[in-house]
Image 1 (cartoon, rainbow, N blue to C red):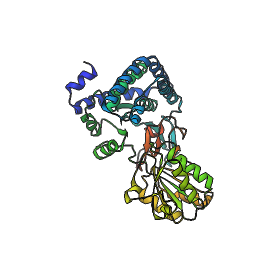
Image 2: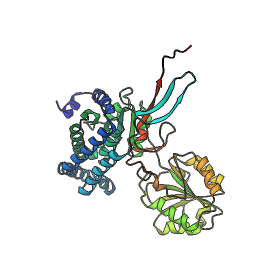
Image 3: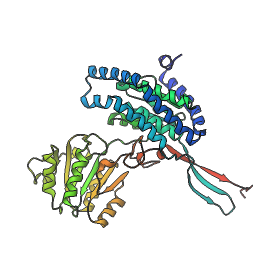
Image 4: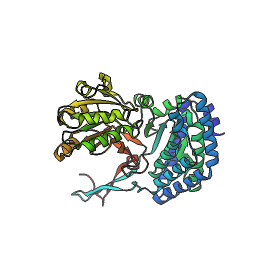
Length: 425
């Protein structure tokens, strides 16, 4: 019976349980493979993606046609669309993951106790990781590759918009992995678009070790509310840039324009601009943003700088616009800026622009976000820009991993204890 047929006869809970049990068995084999063998398997899988390009692009054409019929926006259709160039980029991405340094087996630290016991902490795979995502079919390859490279099994549940594309990509990936000796069950796509399958994944404690949601706010909210499995995620990217009194005006303008307008729809885009009351270039900065077509919503002091600034509501300081809209506040010094950030930041990425090194160090030390920057655009909040290769997501929680999560974030550790016959008195 095919996976698709099985999905039609099993309850979502039974289906996910069966897939997870198979994944756990496959993960044990995968974890026992050498780093070189896992890297080779990903290179073979990338070649299968290229060889299967015709089938993948045909499947993508079906998804695009269905999306147009459903009235998906141009932005959604663009995220969904694959062509030869984008598919080659997907294959290159898998090869790039294969080339990354493997964290599995790394000795984090080691020590020797007075009784002669030798202790070490060693990185190991997390186990079976569930990834729930929307729209972008490239996530199927990226997520699978990252999991395999770090010795994890992956259970993927993509959005209905990309169902045919995801299945075609998965078919090519699995064919390549199996050719190279990786059990096919190490990477599986949930073979149903029944939303109940998502719920089954979220409650599969003991079968799935971690859930990673990649998608819009409603998806992440549901995952965080319903999960009985540890979740690695961020909900909002309410990123701040603080223009300190000692900021260079030209640098401040360049960074603010880039942080907001380079790409407005990514989680690292600036959503709130804080301008110090003693910064000399405030009026010019506001005018530059308006000239680029950015809608500004400001407090009373910012509105006084330019009549085109709209009044900000209380909700604006807690809104992720993902558009050419920006909330702007004037603050009275570094402490006031940090208090505003503490109240309203989503702990994703926050930036200070200043030539005052002491102020910068205070900001870097005291702002408690996953990523804190000095004199750089918040749009650098990306695993690739951090030299991590592909990322599986950005984490804003306080446990396990924070910021861009790549291979190291897909590992945990275990203690190894080596003795010579010691018995505890």
